[in-house]
Length: 228
Image (cartoon, rainbow, N blue to C red):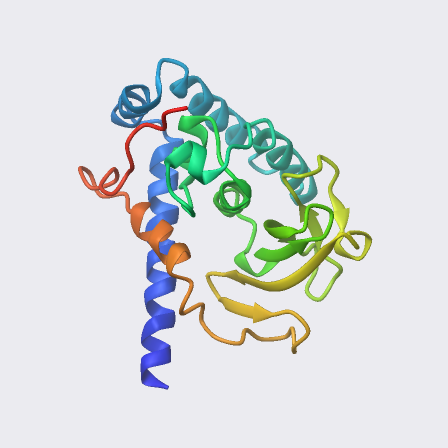
């Protein structure tokens, strides 16, 4: 039990640090923009500035408007497989990497939407990254689920389609598990509390670690510029 509490505390701490670094990024410090241009070319900072402008324009807006506009903004980024983009089999990019490099796969879309909506103030309890089997393409897939109210039919933010639909209408998606900073849920089990604190989701914790915002350490662990 004590070990479980410690692990949960670590995940929460990492999320707090990640959110702090994302707030720094959305302040568009000069070193962030310079690093983005160095890594990904002269237009990288344009995408980051557009991201900041979006978040500023959505402050105080209704949640559903925030959800719809963040989803539409992120879905403009091209889909590129991890192998083609990062030369790795499975790499979860931070929002900075996703937008700066102008590409990513399904996990990257879901993470960028999740962290942006969290920065806008949407509670963690209303957002879950959800791992599914996409039956239309017969492969694993990641989406972001938004719960307007506790226990409601969530809305699915999916990089495969532009429309945001209730999960009950997405019969092409077979949910396997979902997670956020509060823990991990297994589909088909009691949905009122997480099965565990997310321990075992190494890539999720790795993303949080790489989003640390201390000066001079933010970029540690960033991969080389993608080459296509």
